[in-house]
Length: 296
Ligand code: SF4
Ligand code: SF4
Picture 1 (cartoon, rainbow, N blue to C red):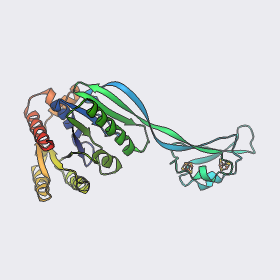
Picture 2 (cartoon, rainbow, N blue to C red):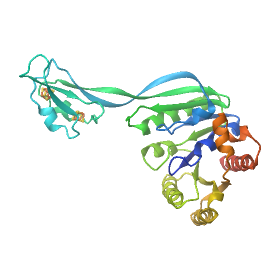
Picture 3 (spheres, rainbow, N blue to C red):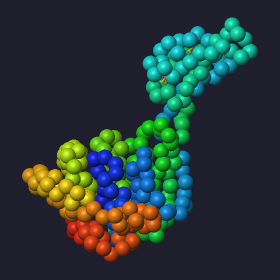
Picture 4 (tube, rainbow, N blue to C red):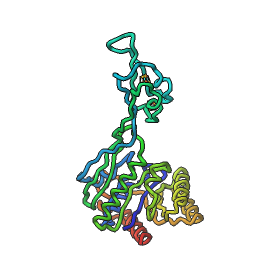
């Protein structure tokens, strides 16, 4: 079983459309959507949810009003401004304190300094993750709640479950739609993978993002391929990316043309290779063959 992770320097490079096509071409694969902040592979693959689990990704402080004596120490020491004071509804001479769960970072300072032990730290639900079935095989994905953090930890949950399913069902591939960028979630997406495919666009910022992402995969010693998506919108930058990749020992495994078939396929809720047999489909199929060769 081999794991491919598809990433990009930023969102919107067409990464997810490629992953959906790879899912159609791979046959025996489990899919994992690790773009937990903007999971949208499910829009194309229309999964049937079989298991739904809550993800507890952090803690927030909660004040027990009956134990609080109103000393105000917690508000004074909270450097995130998460604790506010109000007049007690039952006694205008008494102040009561409460925690804004969105502003609370769960640092625990108030918990440790409260002289009355009136504060507890409780786990909060940060999102959900799902095991599902699609027309291309099993898929694991997740949704992070609004303003929730810890997406790196949620990515690990998704990958771990995808790996477990691949083992149990003796599948050949794990295909991961990775998190964009170079932060904690993308590191959680790629560590230990067999191959990373970086999808980039032929723009100066796309080129710059590519260098940062390749720095990351080089650091983690993960074999890396590059795909230039919509290469023909700027052939000279595409050429610069190819030259840079060659100089840095990274293979450009594919160039995919701009084609409005991509949008039509999205609207139809299909992968590109499923939607039609045009030239863009041939390019994606050639790219997938190259990836398969590399994974062997
Ligand atoms: S430190 Fe404790 S006792 Fe003092 S206001 Fe905060 S919760 Fe109440
Ligand atoms: S846990 Fe930290 S951030 Fe949250 S209310 Fe207490 S001191 Fe403020």
